[in-house]
Length: 448
Image (tube, rainbow, N blue to C red):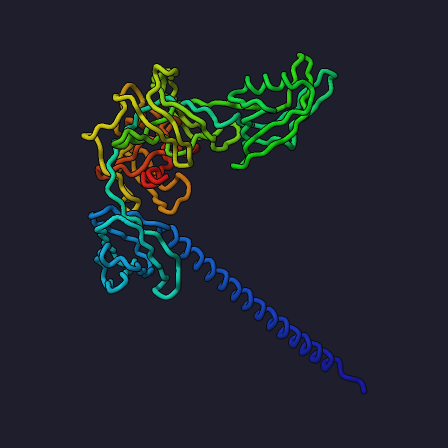
C-alpha cells in the first residue's frame, strides 16, 4: 500500500514533535536538578558562613575582672550554662535562670559579675538545642600597667647559632661541593661542634679548623628536639675548612615598649622577633634593651612601608633592661632603669577583649625626642584571632599622617588606649595602605 506523501509528512512532523517533547522534558529535569544542587550549595554555604560569623563573635575564653560588671554583647542565637558558679558569678540577662547552674542567653545583653577569682567552664548551645562548644571563663584581679610608647634599641643573642640556609662552596680543587645540603636546614640551632660548645660564629669556624678534613659532629636543636649529625668539611682555596652554611648569632633593631608593670616587668613589640631571612621566630638565649635616638622618620606610602631610623647605644653601661622571652605575642623582660620604670600615677587598667569597641582610640608612640598620643579608629575586631592581628586600626590624626604617612616600622608595640584603658598594641602595617594596620589585644600580651 502506498502512503500518500502528505501522510508521510504529517507522520514525520508528529515524530519530530514527540522527540522535541522528550528532549524538552529531559532538559527540564536536568535544569531542575541543577537548581536543586545550586540551592543546596547556597544553603550549605550560608550555614557555614553563619557558623564562621558566630565563631568570630564568640571567644574561646573570656576573662572577667573580679568585682567588676562586664557587659557581654554578642547578639547571637547561643544559650549557655555555667556549672557550679552560682556563688561566684552573678548574671543579669533576660530569661536567665540561676539554680545549681547558671543559664544565660547570648542573643541578649549579658551582664556578668564575678565575686571571686577562679576558672569556670560554660557549655554553649546553638539555638539552645545543639552543642556548639565549651568556653573557659577566667576571673582575675584587675591589673593596672603603665603605657609606655617609648622607642628602644633591642639586641638579642640566639640560643645557639641559627642556620639561615646552606650553599655551594668551591673546593681547593676548583669543584663545587654542598657538604651541608639535606643535613642542615633553615631554623636549626647549632650549639656544639665535636666536643666544643659554640657561642658565636667564630667558635664554629675555630672548631672546624681544629677538626681538619675529618667528618665533623654537629649538635643542633631542630623544632625543640636535639639532634646529632655528621658533615664532611671541604678544604677551600683560602686554606680553610668549610661546611657551606649561612649562620646568624644575634639580631638588633628598634621597637616600641608597650607597657611596664608594677614590678618593672615590661612587654614590647606585640609580635615576636623573627629572622629577617628565614621569617622564623628566634629562640633567644639572652638580650638587652638599650636607649635609642631617633634620627629620621621615613614616611610610608602605598607599597613601601615607612620606618623609624635611629641609633642605639649598646654596651653594659647603657643597658636599660633584659629580654628574657620572645613569643608570637611580643618580647618581655625586666626594666631596671628608673627613667623607664613603672610610675603608678601614670598606670591605667588593662582592658579585656570584650571591652574593646569600634570607634575612637589613641596610639602612643615616639617619633622624636618624646612620646605623643595620636588619634586612630578601631575599624574591625576579631576576638578569636590566633595571631597578633585581633583588630584593624586606621590612623586619623593629621599630625601622624603628615609626619609618618600612617603606621611605620618601629611603631610595633605602640600602646593603643581607649576609654582610659590600655586595650592593645600596634603590630603590623598594611603594606599597600599604610594608614591602616593590625593591633594585638593587651589581654593576649599579658597572658602570652
